[in-house]
Length: 149
Image (tube, rainbow, N blue to C red):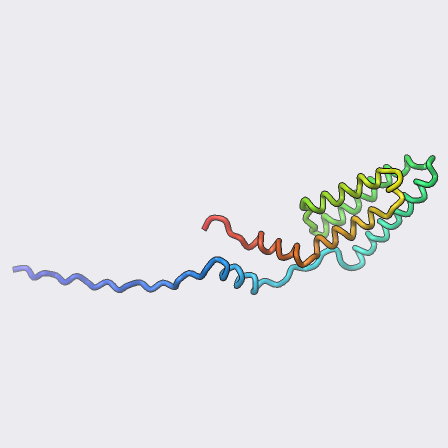
C-alpha cells in the first residue's frame, strides 16, 4: 500500500507595509541637496553691466530721435547675447520667464518706455524667478512625482 505523502506547510510571506506616497516623497527630498543657484558671480554682473549699457544707450538714442534706427539692431545683438548667457547657465525658460522677456521687449519698443531701464529690470526678475525658494520647491515637486507606479 502506498503511503500518503505529507504536503509541505507553506510559510506566510512577510512584506513590509508600504508607506504613504507623501512619506516616500518627503524622505526622498530630505536626502537631496538644494540645487545650485544660477546666474551668480562675475558672469552675471558682466551681463548686468551690458544690460545697463544697453538701457543707457536706449535712453540717449531715444532722446536723439534721429538715432532711433540704431536701437533695433543693438537690442537684437545684446538680447541674443543675454539669451545665450541664460542658455549656457542652464536657465530653463518656463512660461513666466518667457512672458517676462516678451513684456520687457514690448515695453522697450514703446517710445516713452524705451528710455527706462527695462532690460536690466527684466534680467533681475528672471534671476529672482530662477533662484527663488518657492520656484525651487515647485521644481522639486514636479521632479519628484513618478508617473506609472
